[in-house]
Length: 111
Image (tube, rainbow, N blue to C red; front, side, top):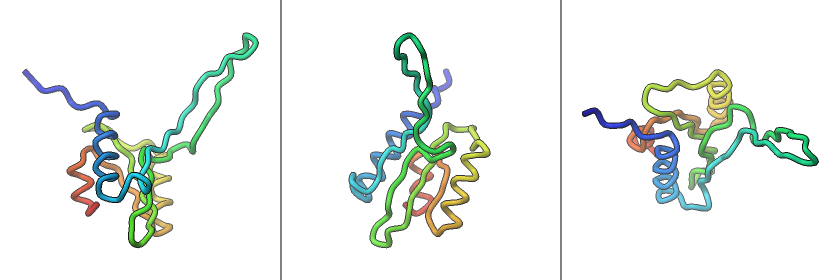
């Protein structure tokens, strides 16, 4: 019997908990983005929040203050083009912009 692959939300939670232990809960946070419906007077509208392509986890790495952006994916999943652009922008500006599939990959990146 094959083991089920962990859900992306479970990997995100584990990565966030690890980073908060390493750098402090006030320095690393979940970065929500997307859209949600809102119904008012019988009319449904979608409200977008966050930046398209923004990473799942954001933070500031002490003591340097470098910006940290971590996109979390399930095993076998790839970044969408807008996510690649976002992480590239972070790296070009001197920050850490990475995609991981596990806490072990965070550690492998030196975090």
